[in-house]
Picture: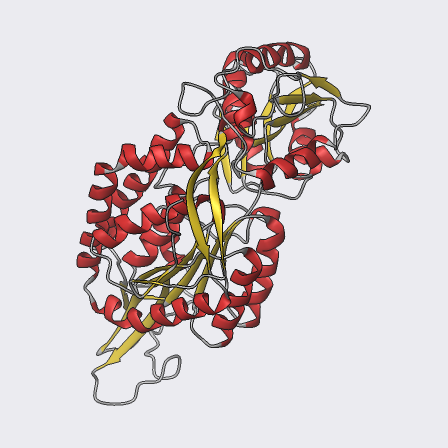
Length: 514
């Protein structure tokens, strides 16, 4: 076994981890991708202090030059696209085509933000008094802690790290343990792109030690902003912690994403969208389809077509041409087993449930199911609005189906679980599309498209249990990583008091035309 991958603080590897843990290939659990040196909370604090120390120097670099560093990252990501994607496939089991798309999303993000180095615009604002000018400026928030999940081990971190660095912030990044080999490769590309030591620090730690390190760093005044992608439960705790220090974190949490299929929908298109968003990445996206809410008049036909499409979908070895591969690791397999336990007597199960084995086979399986954490894709028809399966995120290859009569009813069903990340409606009626978008609580709405599939220049984020209204991507994320500063400059040579020393222009308000 190779030597352990260690945390990086101020450009140096941190020795003496509290323990080491293997990162294994979920499609072939005998394949150890790498060994991770897991750090304690004190390393997180060290990294926060290093980020704090480096921040002023990094912010002093003109923004267009920081943009050039981001351009360098994009070029190196392009040169390493196939290599990094292959590592993503090997470490988390994401199909090769999707892994390539994930790295492309980093490249797209860099392409967008390299130009923002020349467009971190403020404004000039007219004053109400003479010989006075008003200005606004974007200032970096300071040192940023980024805690990310491993289902998108390199794309989602780039949504935080690229704009944070571009805006003049420094970063402490805590990636998921089960995707740490990918994370280290990601870090190496940034380091070789010209990101200085201390500007991007990486801490490999478990959840409790990360929380403890973050708590200590906030108490010491070392962290100015937190970005978190993960579960709603943990996001709630991080939100509470940040609130103690009057900080607003950037929270991107879970989803129970509805797809409404109207009576006039193109059913073949709807089936294609449901298949990809329900079972792509084995249902392990925060934007994965949770429940299909289908009009009662087309329910039977949709279920028939959807069931056939899922039965025919290729699954298995993620290096091959498959729709989806394994679950991410044993933790997620155990969580999905719990979700399968929510299937009740009143449900109609379409397809086989459980792990794919020799005794519980999947027709057309690609590769050796015994090698990895492969689970059958499941459709559960007849879910009700008070079912555990309807109300909770499942994070695995399972999709529920329920029916509706009116669009208002469909919207209410879509909002009922309390999440608000992504949503979708299949309709040929523009009025239905706009009514759905107006009524659904989700931060993202797709019309005649799946619940999954973010573009790098559109705001990404949710409401309710899916997040606190913060947004990643595009120009909107700049508000997460900059603070507005106003400046008023009086060159009149005297004190002019706003609202008091202003000139009033007189008018005759009683005048009427003859």
